[in-house]
Image (cartoon, rainbow, N blue to C red; front, side, top):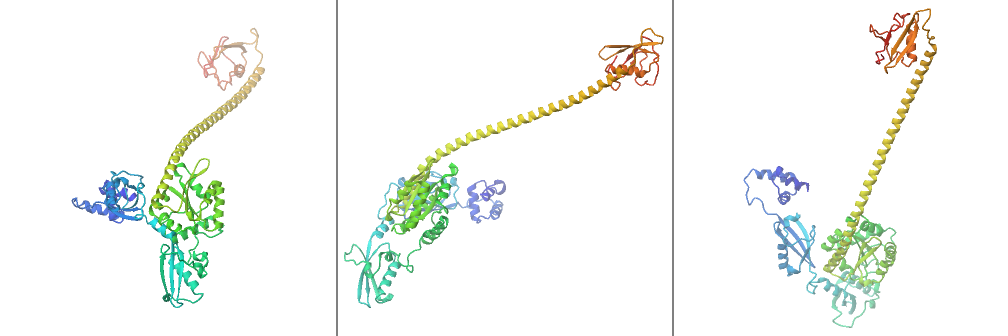
Length: 562
């Protein structure tokens, strides 16, 4: 996809059509550098209508037992493919359903270029309105042959004796050869040149001799009696303790028998397969297909080789199903399967499997997961055709798709509710966190205020203690009439209040400072100023006497103390 985008970048290559980009990449074997160089070299020459060939698409179309190869231009419509198929298959377009498009069903007028298809594609045709006939259904012919009995007339020339043996049509030539040689050799070992074999069907006569005349029991006739015979290896070992190992063996043997083109079998327990199919997100859920094989059924080989390995069936199962398989040929394996089904799906599924006889196998159980329990939508028996199998698979998918859409809607609504709840929870948590931080900030602020108040209180207490000590240390205020000179000082405070006191003329200036400080105006915070002349007397603590008259005024200017 990256290469397509780069080649389709008009700024890089001059190509703005994704289909042309894909064609150019295919012509250069998907070599990005070579494709860009090709566009660069072609851009230097004038464009020509014949320089670019139309992109051709190959379609391999399957219909019942036929395969048709169709090659059309990318610009063609889907209806043109149907016209070609109508000629090849002799099927009217009106009764033809062309399936296998990766984008889902398309109309006849859809242009192939709009589907962005690769060069090689696989499709299949369904004709539900046309019943299979003997001329068109090889399955029916083969099934009839398998159900027939055949009389083999064996002439042993050296013994001068003829043997008439009755074999079922499901036996292979190699198995018959082994049984005949083994039993004739009990009397005299024949060579390949000394026996003539003639075969007629059971419609040519009634005078049959059973193979048991040779001492051949039924198990040997059906390839089950001797380990040295030509019988096939079991798809699944008996009494395997590990389900995964058993399914690995099943898959490997199935590929050996019928080829690599077969459904992808889930390797794991039935419980794990159910979890994979039913219990993911609604958009990712699938149906569970349980394939039950039985080698003793004459239908098994036909069903596996022509149904399960058909390209259309393989693609459809791989895209829409989780496929789990089990071999019930051995009674021990069948009993184990019934136990597993009872444990995971209940007794109804197990009882359903029990009702089918050996000649009705193989079975394909289509199981859909539901909210409360799992439901078996369909049980497909071995006596079917590719078309019928596909139709029944598609019918199950229609039921499943309807249920899946409801589940997707419910899941989306539930996720929306959970999203709203999560957002509300997150908003609530953020609110709690903001409240916590606010409360912590308030607590810190209150603690800081208390600390500052405590400091202020200690400072005030200390100042009050100093004030009281100064107040007690002041000499008594002299009387107005005394022997010594007296100065009456009036001090205006910042509040406008006046402090008035008499001092002896011999009193030191420090006593004045102590008096003012005892009234709450320490000299660290205030200055004493005279009114006239305006002087700062705060630094005159060394002066021993006051030379001002009785009505002198002292002004404090540091804090506007007048």
